Image 1: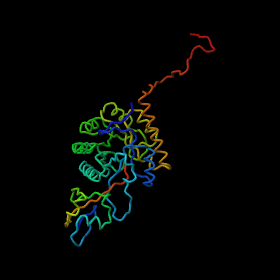
Image 2: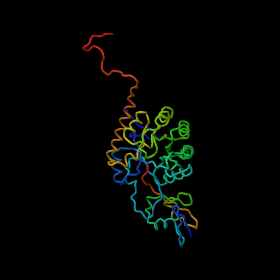
Image 3: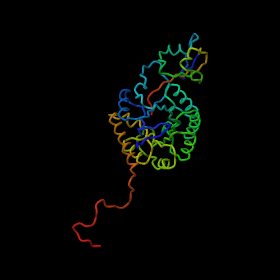
Amino acid sequence: MILTLNGKQESIDKPLSLDALVAAKGLCPDKIVVEHNFSIISKEDWHKITLKDQDMIEIVSFVGGG
Amino acid sequence: MEDLLHIGGRSIKSRLLIGTGKFSSYPLMRKALEAAQSDIVTVALRRVDAGAKTDNILEYIPKSCILMANTSGARNADEAVRIARLAKASGAGNWIKIEVVQDNKYLLPDNLETLKAVEILAQEGFIVLPYMSPDLSMAKRMADAGAAAVMPLGSPIGSNRGMKTRELVEILVREIKVPVIVDAGLGSPSDACECMEMGCAAVLVNTAIAIVRDPVAMARAFREAVSAGRTAYLAGLASSGSEASASSPLTGFLRNETR
């Protein structure tokens, strides 16, 4: 199935939860915020979301800015 | 009595807000923030790059500072609202600088979309500070919609050209009830001092500190300039005139009075 992660298409071969995706990407959970199909998902709920074909994921964090 | 900036239910000592972009390293940024003694610090939100190992910028911002995320990257009100909600979920608190820009050449704000975002986010309980073009009716509408301050630009972001909008900002200072904070374009401490002498409540500076040879010293210079300008404003600036007005007595010296 195909996901859109931060605007880029990615294919994954087996069902994946949101927390598994974060771990697979090597991201530190404390630094990021995750949006799943335009809804913000709190860290505690990542394991409850199983990703489906065509899901849109945004993962963001703070950077310098004025 | 201590001169404090009242904004968003907080009483703030420093009238110098600092942006965290463009510093060559986070440790250097931290030193500059400490030298500036700012109470409000802006950050931006961006997509993570899974491959890149980057430090968490929040660890380099003094814990006593109010974090104010900006909505840079937003091209309309809906995107600004989405970014604001993400920032809040990231633990940045509820202070948000609304920045809605469609024009990539001058980075001038879209006041209409900015106003729409102010309306929505103020309703949701955010402390909303809109970056805007200095337009009186728009500033009034933003204040009426719940903006905690308005932040007109002095000149385009990062241009370091100073107060090109001076006369329009002066009108806002006179007419707008919420604090007027000049954001963008201030290139030197004297620009910041000028804003404060005009009666602006505060200034927001980023590029003019971040990109110079010694950002820590420049942060201190901006702090001193903001403080000097504020003191001058409170003291009441002397009026200017087109003719001389002698500082020393002109009479009673050497020569007989002829008139």
